[in-house]
Image 1 (tube, rainbow, N blue to C red):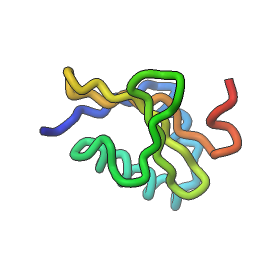
Image 2 (cartoon, rainbow, N blue to C red):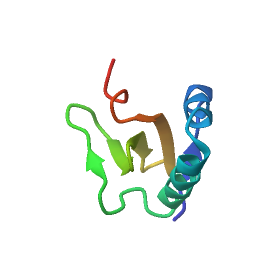
Image 3 (tube, one colour):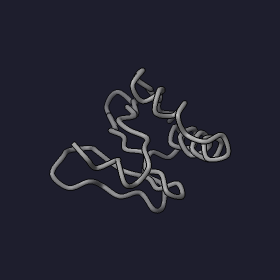
Length: 86
């Protein structure tokens, strides 16, 4: 059961702004989500349905899981100091 990962343009721009060494680690983790959308260390965010967060060093990737459609929608990939700001 493999999930499809959707990366909106806004999130792709955030990924492009990440330093190269960190980008490689983030890309690996995102690809692993296709096989296991709820890996060890994932945190379900309070106040929203189906929204999760994984930590990669000082960066956070927020994403939504659509189990019925087998889709993972990336919402944000930012430094931890910026990811939760509105």
